Image (cartoon, rainbow over all chains, first blue to last red; front, top):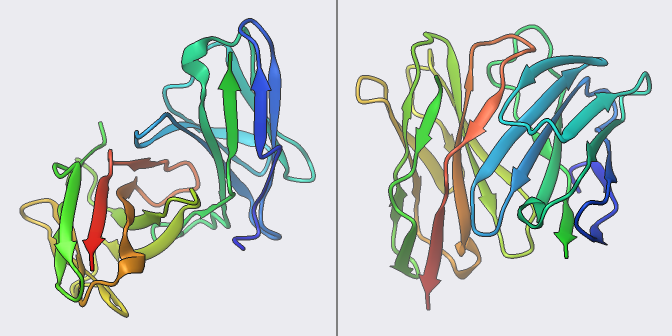
Length: 116
Length: 116
């Protein structure tokens, strides 16, 4: 168990809908990362938050948004869903102190999103 | 821009043999970190090994070692004495820089299958 909790584990919805994925980082971790993994693909970096602030952005669609709350949990909102958004969405966390070159990511078990 | 390349989509190896998974990277930053993660069929992401750009010795973690060739920008993972449980997807990843804003990007992965 990595200590990172993602809910729900599975989500089935229809095109055009909006969903929210939730992530609770490990206790003490300030940084949260979101990744998208489509079928048999690598992980695509979406966005990173550090202590409530957005710090790095990847190829995140405008239909997607995220935030990190004061208690450090994070939510990824996906709207106007399309079939191609079906994927495994991972959240990961790290302590992210100033010297972070060797800070590894601890991953949650992911949310499997199916858009029908 | 960051880039991670894994040129082996799939590999088959006989049990107990050693295996090398290739990874090359591209960065203009002097400070960066390289990671390998394992993703078994259950889907979770498991951290294996880390190598810092300033580390002079190759990293080792049990049966895993990282063959770091900085001038060639390669960070190959070597698994000694492979086991059936090593069958999984393996991802190479890189963190560029050492601030709390440095994102980690992943390669497309190599699917390793161990034959009994």
